[in-house]
Each structure stands twice: as structure tokens, then as C-alpha cells.
Image (tube, helix red, strand yellow):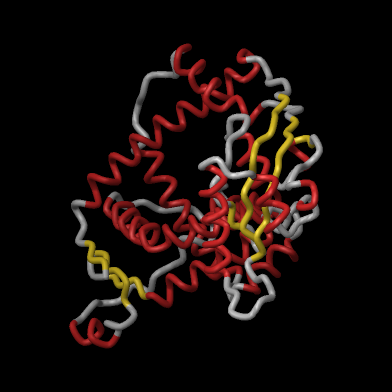
Amino acid sequence: MLFLRISLLLSLSVVAFTTVKAQTYSNRIVAVVDGVPIAASEVRDTITAQEQILRYQHQNDPARLAKELAEVRASAVESLIDREILLAEFRKIGGVIKGQYVDDDVNTIIRESFKGNRDAFVDELAKTGMSVKKFREQREKMIVMNVMRARHSGDHPPATPREVEDFYNKHVDKWREGDQIKISTISIPKFSGEAGSSPEKQKKLAQELRSKIVNGGDFAAAAKAYSQDSHAENGGSWDWMAKTDMMPAIANAAMELKTGGISPIIDQETSYIIVACDAKKLGTAPPLEKMRPEIERMINQEKSKDNIDKWMESIRKKHVIKRF
């Protein structure tokens, strides 16, 4: 996940924010932190760069790609604001990052995310218009942010046995292996081919169908009449399948449902999909004791994050932030 954010926090040109410059850039500035402007063009650049990396990372998982892209777009401006704040706090304490730390960080990214292929790494950067030098500058700023956050993660009590047990029960679905699901689907294409068709109209149709089904309508009849996938003739019904053999978005939606439940509308690349969970056969989860060390680590990370979030909330109040 660390690499999924590598391009999100791109550098700002630190300039004197005079009245003249404020007027010059007034149509493009989305935020100002202690007099340092964040331009809309920079936000667009950060999103474009991050999208390229995400598409490389999740080219075989459209659902996860869509989720990650949405998170990047939603958080871009606030992430840039937080970066400026953390850089300012780092300068206050006279902090310095050694070049070797940056080298090690970049080499780790190449090894873990590009299987050691430096050429592939450079090619992906080039697609975003970013040089290796500029990338190193961004990683240095990311390291600064991580250092500052680590300094304020705070002390907290270790995870208790009750916390570990509760965490295990809450997340056991993610660790269980051998799950099988029997589902039915209705797939409404975003473009039907008819005159005047549009994704908006097709989504409205999917919503209307779902509403009728939830209120007692016949799922199979609706699938035969409206669905346009390979299961439509069977009333949308699928054979039993392993969860791991299904598209992640559909499998996850089905697993969250009780037997007989109907999913929200799933927005896929070309279709709107309604999933009905017909039946489940749950597999086997690893025992709690095997998962205990990992769960304790996760809980401790959550507690550290809570401390960091509280600290960030407090220091934001010490900086002049304007959002436009």
C-alpha cells in the first residue's frame, strides 16, 4: 500500500505568495498553506501520475482499481496540504534526510513493486512525465512525512486478548480459504445500443429493477427480461463457484450478503450488476492462535494511527490553511 501512494504527494513550488501572484494564479489555486499555493494543475498532475501507477498495479483487478482511483481523487488536495504542514514541522526541528535513505527507499520500491526491473520502473515514471530525479525528491518528502508521523505515533498499551479475539471475528472472512458461493446476477450494460441510451438511463433501470426485487419481485423473471450476460437464460443463476474464481467485486458483494440477500448496484467498467446470494459454503479459516501475532501487529498499527491522527488534527490548527 505504501507504493500505491508514491505519486500522490507531489512537490509544490515554494514561492513567495504576493498579492500579484495571488491574482495571477487565482483561477488555478485550490489551497494555500502558510502562503504556499497548491494549484489545480498540480492536483491534476498528482492524480494523473498516481493513476498510471495504479493501472500498472491492478491491471487484472478492475474493482480494486476503481476503488483506489476514487480514493486518490478524493484525498489529493488534503494529502498535499498535510505534506506542506509536515515539511514545515520537520524544518522547525532542523531535520535532515540522508541521501542513502532515499536510495534505499527507491531500491525497495523497484524490488517489491517491479520485481527488481529498474527499466520497467523508469518506463512507468516516463508515462507520467516524471524523471527519476523528481521521483527521488518526492520520495524524500514522503520519508520526511513518515519520520514525523513515527515521532508522534505515541505510546499505547499492547493489544489485549479480548481485542485480538474481536478483531479476528470481525475479519475472519478475509483469511478463510475454500469459500464457495452460488449466486444469481442481473447485468445491465451501460450502453444498450438503443437510440438515446446512456449510462445514466441504464443505471436508473438497474436501480428500478433492484427496488422491485427487494420489494418482492421475481429476480429470475427480471434477469430473463433485462439481463445481458451469459446467465440470463437461466434466470441469472450461476453454478457453484469458488470465491477465488469469481470477479472480486462480485464475490465480495455476495459474501457480505445473507442467503437470499440482494446487493447494491455494482458499477463495473461496462455494466451495472445486481447480485443475489443464493447460498454459501464457507471454507476453513486459520486458527486464532496462528493469526495472533499478525492481529496484534494490526491492532497496534491502528492505535498508532489514532495517535497520529490526533496529532495531525492539533498541528493543522497552528498553520494557516485556505481552501478554495
